[in-house]
Length: 323
Ligand SMILES: [Ca+2]
Image (cartoon, rainbow, N blue to C red; front, side, top):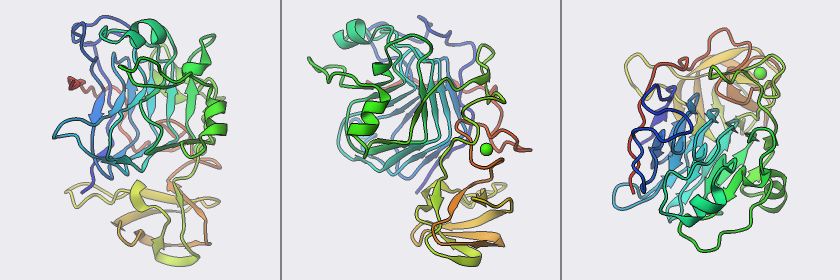
């Protein structure tokens, strides 16, 4: 069974940014925007920001969070947290998790959790956007990493475990791309140029490098025409899950402006059933509806008449993170 997060996750008022808000208890892990353990889930079009913990924490623990597999995390904004935009836990049963077209920017580590020397000494004040305690089970492509002007860029991707005595020496994004291409490929390090960062408006500005810089979600598996489109990976797509009032995704091929709505996804056969016929070549790129030449990076698509995600501001409280 799949699940989808298509909301705009944020925090209003209850947790002040960059600080010692009322929901943090000294000596325990700060709260995550979403603490997640699921399989074949879709987490997209969210803006996670001003959190004291990670925006998204793919975690594993105990008897209730044992599997994190084959999730699709695209395209979101993880910004201005006091921990890391995204955290990935160590442990078994963690595989096939793909992060595409996300922005991870402007987070700065605050050691609210004082139990770990690595936090209070090494990571304090570092621009940690991604904190990973593992070197397998995930794939980042088409994402933007940025820590603001001036900080030590080797910490944008921080690898280590909070209770290890000696964590791995940290490296710049380009090093990870060159040395661990099975984990990182085609990511960018640049200022995302949001429309208004101070006001937490995470739309791309007109001159933003996010515009038309994203990767496509998947490709067609063979040439064809009609309403049954085979794709290499159907796990990115949503057909309403038979819920009343929910529509399937609008999709669009590269090089075309025509769009079709998904009526049904056959995840086993990797088949998209469409409401109107399209024509495609073998290996043609497929995405949700987009504007311009390519998809944008981040939660918004510049130039789309209707953003399919709700605007930030609907307000969702974060929940306590388990130990
Ligand atoms: Ca675009």
